[in-house]
Length: 196
Image (cartoon, rainbow, N blue to C red; front, side):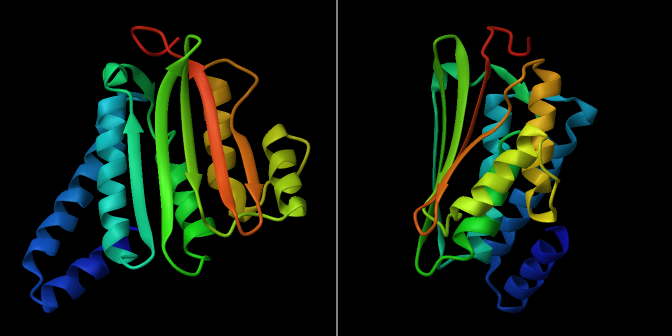
């Protein structure tokens, strides 16, 4: 990701596309500042949104013709704490395993809302989707009843971190249909001070 982004910056600079060089460089700086966040495991949803926008700004420059996105986060939740890097890997998965393999424009939707005392996160795409066999394998891996695979490691990592940090049995939920896209979601406690 870093090398590809630096290559894109060089290419844009050589093409004298100054505004895009500034935009992608700022986005890269913001991305790493929030990723590192002084070693803290928890950040506010406002910071997570900034992190997502930085990441997606970079990816939109790289995948200009095939990527669009929408982010919908309830403004009342901006100060709620969330486990750092719990949403961005889901977006990355949607790009690399859904949108990139789709012909035509791809759309990723990120929604974060509170319902029944839970913070609900939902990342959906209209990408390639998965056939029923691949979906079963991914679900088995997440439940611990199947082997981890290289293509599912990012999701496995987020799933395990959610279970561990929130002390709950349920991590990620995955829905998908071949040719129709995928939806990956999770729900965690939404206490006033964030982490529980």
